[in-house]
Image (cartoon, rainbow, N blue to C red; front, side, top):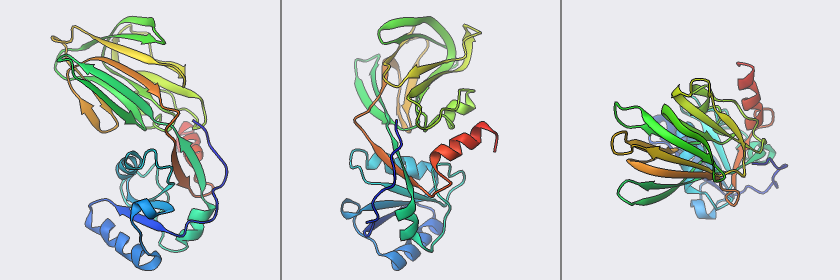
Length: 263
């Protein structure tokens, strides 16, 4: 993951996307009347109106396009979003600081032989899907590191996602430009003293589900879920660049830093 400098001041064509809430759609209509609207494939910048869920869906939708995404919060948390204001939008976008985010690439095989792939901007999480606790084997770069982790689950997080589910699971907050991934257990029972690991962002994580028939496990990449998995590979996809725009002084790096000091 890396952070680049200022973007060129040429965001003339804007495409506005909104969540389904009526008040958010009304805000979109006001902004379209003020700034115009073009189809997303013709836009210089995508403006996303909603909360973090909409931002994640927008980033997934335009993954690989290199179109910058500028979000304005009309949801609840809005950690990834800018403050909502209807005035001076073009100047705000021109002055915004871009953050280049690389997603995780997840490959999974289920107990029926099915194979699945998905990207995750926040995290890839494995979760027990029944009352039976999960048993997992964890390897990094082909070397076994935990022969048996008895747990409710485990997740691999990007720096951008380290303040989301990873933080709730008591994982570390990572600076946005840190070349790291967080490997964090979810309510681990054994080994009791293992609280996770920090891995270089070039590492490949392999997780095998032990006793998969008796102890079924699902895997979730952001919002894509696959059930009854047997084996999961996770690595950072450095070939996929996602560009988030934030107002000066309110960058994603600054917000992550604030989280580390509790405000």
